[in-house]
Length: 404
Image (cartoon, rainbow, N blue to C red):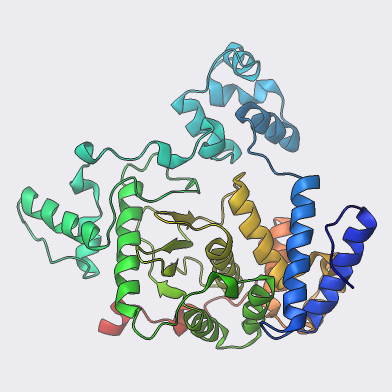
């Protein structure tokens, strides 16, 4: 049957069911069924975006929504604003939010600073002339072998070392777009510098790895590709197999632990030559966290990453950013299709047995199901023996471990 633009809920439901059937058949890439699956996914996404659009929220609307969600009254906002009158003035749009208010709301209510200021972080990049090179994590960069041992070098020498390190990666301050707010770092003055240093290191390692990496074609990425990648999670060596598959597709994957003072899980970007790069920190050594982070970053490569952009993700935080929401949705759907989740016994009567049976049906690791239940319930004590704790880093010894 010819696929058409969705105009009714009945047509939407029928296409959802067909997508579920096609996914269960695991069609080969570039096959007729695979092409059909991708076309239906695009039609479903277009319909959802038109019928249920996700607009950038107004700052005050975002605050009101979070108040309603938490059952808060205006008086409960006094600690964030200072006085009752200020709360009233802000909520009635008579007083603008100050930097201090934004900081307090970001930490206290979990609303991204990006939403509260109504603009992305790149709109206020570090001024090149005001860069304090000493704020880079120089000792840690030196200890990891990223730059020469600085010892008691003169300030000018240190500055030149760090400048050289950053420029070697082709980075300039303000050249990368930060689409996530890193909660808990609002009062850490070196966090931005540490992020740039980490990003530069990932780019440098990616360039060392380019030989032997396949040519990248954006058209190879699809919902079916994400699904196929996600199903590698069922193997003990799945993370290695996934990286091998991505590199055949032309996507370089770099494992680099985060620098101190940053809350970072992964990143997605393209180098100056258009070669896509994914960086992973393995901040949490868990099977479920590794897989969701990886597919989230692949989704960014597929849908969002343009020139001179880097999506840096702290997946513990909430975000109202539409692109982050889409990456989350694509990753979630790749592992556990929405039409199956709430009908499953794992959702209705969660237990080790129902989780393992559902994981077997989906051809994914049980940790994925257990992680979904923990996140949705907010109870991270649940099924802690099923999320694959301490099973990922051992597959990726770091440079430091190799030297030891």
